[in-house]
Image (tube, rainbow, N blue to C red; front, side, top):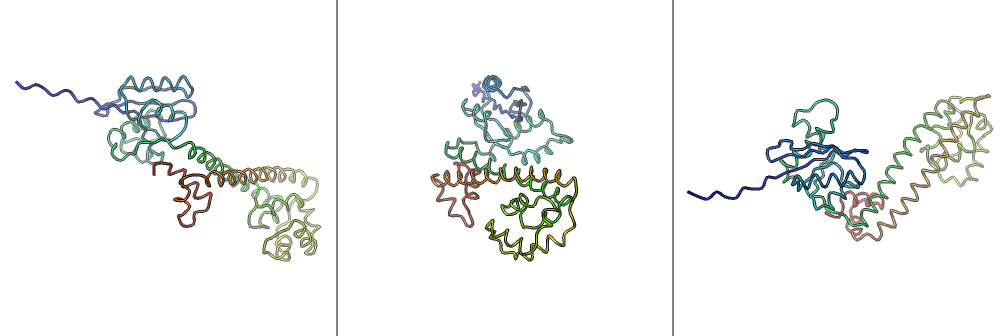
Length: 298
């Protein structure tokens, strides 16, 4: 009678559906059966409980949608292998399991865990980036978010002007440019713009060091032929709204520039800069974005 081979250890995987306040967790066994389901709070005690329960369940590999943050640090710190499955990929994977309807955190946690079980060879373990790359990533993403915010505010200002002062809405190419904001600070209503003539506009443009290539006569024609804006008692109230948008855009422009300067400083001393900067059409900010999204594990 032959002696049986020692039992092969059962491979146990986990999936974590990340959220702002709490995280849904699912642990699956070798056949894809859900062994444990639980939720942990996004705080120190909750993350410690998460790690403890995963280790007690003999989990070694965890699927999650995002590659950074306190949850990732807790998992890596506990020696667990983290496999990132981006949200777009997870969305496509849901159909494999016949899911329909709205997003379900518990179900997504199961999908993440089971994909780690079935598609492990397709997934690359997350590696810690250097502090240098992590810091640069934070700066790059903060600038990206502010740019998106600027686009939204610029669109709101343009929509506002198209109603109360149409001539200013399309006078210059970019509503959030310095020259456009200067114009709105000086000529915030239709009545104030009515004071302009070609010569007066030309003189004002020179006073603010306008470097655009559009002839003042062309700009004045745009003002003169545009639909009339609001005049009278309510014009100043609308001008106050315009001033609010302009002030926000001024602040955003300043902070975006400050972050771009900081990105240039961080990127200049990064050891991978020569590699990424050598790519065609890779300006500083674009190259830095590429570097941080690839990370150190090229």
